[in-house]
Image (cartoon, rainbow, N blue to C red):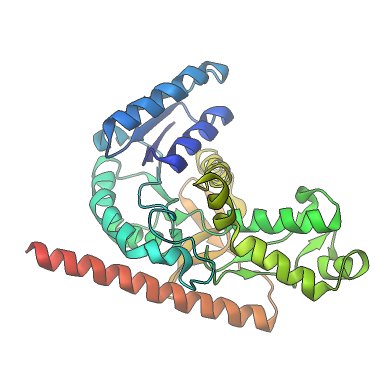
Length: 321
């Protein structure tokens, strides 16, 4: 199958590498506004592709996405360039929404023209409002974002460190926004069906102290990474590759991704069945009353961000008339 990656920056290049290393598709087409960059990244990846025979990597234009089963959109202004690296800023990644929505308004219709049957995966920050805008621009519902899958993995990692277990043995999920209003579902987090809060009480410092530390680590993990390396790329690339596998193999696996939910009036993350058509079904997880209220607040924040994106697109369209 053919997969397209639109945006050959840090995240797009890392995602291409993850796809090649996992041997997930027959063909990968890299598209970027800078054709030379796309060509350079494709060439670099192509030299490693023989280690996973059957994967062909090339650069191209939007028209080369024709017949792609899946297109991953990684284009846009990143957090450092967009000034979204202040832990005290409640907007967080949402500060990038309007500017990146304008970029999406240009490229999404072109992607749909070239690959009308493709599933579209939004990777660019902030993925939730951008997926909402993408759904409207595309005119179909085969759109989802990487959502809070990465946040959920970060939650598992930080819990595992405190409990001295393997992250893969931790069942923990984050829902809502991929950003500062995200909701960590402590009420159902467990290791082998034992609540993690009980385990923290026995094995660590006071549970509330540990809980605050972990919430801080998860909410601002992207900033900690950017402060050290300049860009958060590898974790999200692994997530994008995992979701690519779910689509191409029609796995129908349950993962927390961003999808439009009519009851919330916006795109946000809940556990969803991911398969050949993108999100096939959404599952409502168990939550405490406080977590449910926090999810409603997160949804309100995302609705407002999506509305700002729509207003920005309307202003540009009006100015161009």
